[in-house]
Image (cartoon, rainbow over all chains, first blue to last red; front, side):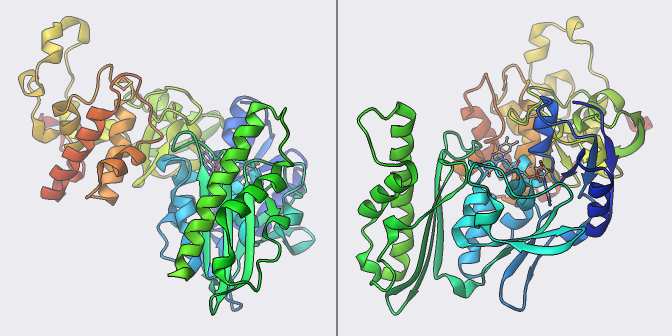
Length: 288
Length: 198
Ligand SMILES: Cc1cc2nc3c(=O)[nH]c(=O)nc-3n(C[C@H](O)[C@H](O)[C@H](O)COP(=O)(O)OP(=O)(O)OC[C@H]3O[C@@H](n4cnc5c(N)ncnc54)[C@H](O)[C@@H]3O)c2cc1C
Ligand code: FES
Ligand code: FES
């Protein structure tokens, strides 16, 4: 690890001031679960670490007047896993309680995972899958960014030095009847090799909204459009899990060819099976 | 360099440390508590797990500065009573080392139920992973006193053991859960006693 100066602000505005004062050599440290690994092998070597540990304003969960669920960027997985959310928001707690391992969840934060933007992490897929927005504070003020503008197509985020992610805003419970997250990983504490988020709103047995997002296999999560086209307005029974999942694999990775390398064939099969599982789990609820 | 104070197993420890000092190094080198092991330094093996105010962390992936002013419990904190010096390993016969704890003069009541269960279920061989295993298991069982075997396996997913094959560790988790359910008071470390008691 290279030497650094450790700064301990107590308010978000102070964080931004410190980031600006030491740009571009200053970095936020939230839980440090990702950052410290990079600093140890020197792939990351910030000269200033601005700690969110004492910025209590960035921790915790509140409901906005709009019904949105606003989760502070420095809220840990462990805290979120213990929350008793209503409706589809329960899937947020479930995702946070079923990634990495127990000790990593104590330190790791939802904001850290979004900013690290590793495609195999669960939070970028979940955020994209339900269309949550990301609230960012900088010296210029507050702005709200959609996932498609936050996560860059080639990987990474659109955050600039001096930007602080303050909260992730999840849509209200009414937005979806059910949200299902499925993933495949080698060992329990490994990051996903393929993941799928299915967000579905059903009214009177008819699909009012459906978002299918595949994570971990592309530099940023892929929102599937063509493979789910025409389903809105149809009865839930019209969803054919196998057909949709096969189409999603093609949409994410391109058409199958006879000389696909083995890893691509493997990814294809994983996308199909996690997507199938998500579709079956999601449609079982409104059907019954 | 920076002055940092961390309470470790009830003792206030202050050190002047490099900012880069990991909590693991603070515990081992500044506080001199070597029960917490360094297995990988990259948050993969779990040997370094300790509690920070009741929450379990991998101390190799946390800066000492991140927990400045807070309280940490290490494996040594689980059985305060047993901190009397054990004879140096080389002066003991192997039979002595493998003899039951009782024969070594240890009172099982001094041990945390998870430690007793690890001993009784033979849940360790070389013992390198054990401090981390025990800390994570204790932390988990306090949250979920009625786990299934699968729950226990998932709880220790971040802890690697190269020796046991995990079966006996899961056995120990189940046994400890049962003990902790029947004697809830035993699940907490025994209160510190003045030194002259020993
Ligand atoms: C052993 C292990 C297993 C793991 N397994 C999984 C897994 O299965 N699934 C999964 O999804 N993840 C997994 N992770 C990754 C984990 O989710 C992330 O490391 C963690 O959530 C990141 O959060 P953090 O608070 O520790 O971020 P940090 O490490 O503190 O920060 C990460 C990056 O984001 C920046 N940053 C953090 N917060 C902000 C903010 N508010 N504003 C601006 N920038 C910010 C930092 O500067 C840094 O560049 C694993 C990690 C480990 C060590
Ligand atoms: S030494 Fe900390 S997890 Fe391996
Ligand atoms: S007992 Fe040897 S590593 Fe677990």
